[in-house]
Length: 165
Image (cartoon, rainbow, N blue to C red; front, top):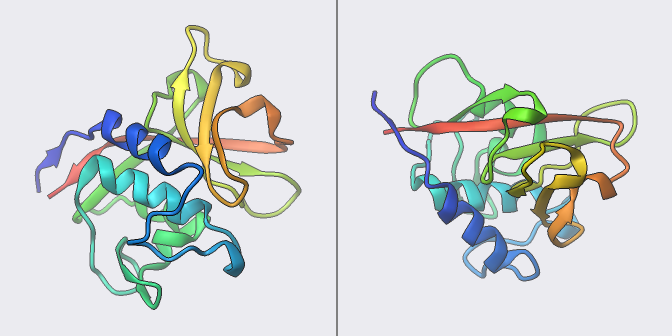
């Protein structure tokens, strides 16, 4: 498979466009546990244009009722992006904060337990630090929000490498 480039600017532009609104082409999951990973997936799709329609373990959205768990679930999003086997769709690697770029993702754990929030990084300052990383998110709508304003217990960063076609 060919690893195609990720259009980071398209993902960030999408994040800015829809941070305080909902794209009517996608269901709003706010009342069903949160919309953050749905929004993250939309941003990622805007930058890759590739879905993976593999039942259960893919990454796709057709409707509220026809979607992969990775499209809307924080841990499944992580598992899909960091998979070892080449298959269609975006791929990422977990990196330290110092290696993130706009268009990457941060997953946040607020209390002991699973990671539960999945903002998209829209800006990284000249010195990588939580104060200089700005994010956009749904569930608690935000754009240009400093990562440092979240009550983070732990975070992990996903650097998008591209997408397999």
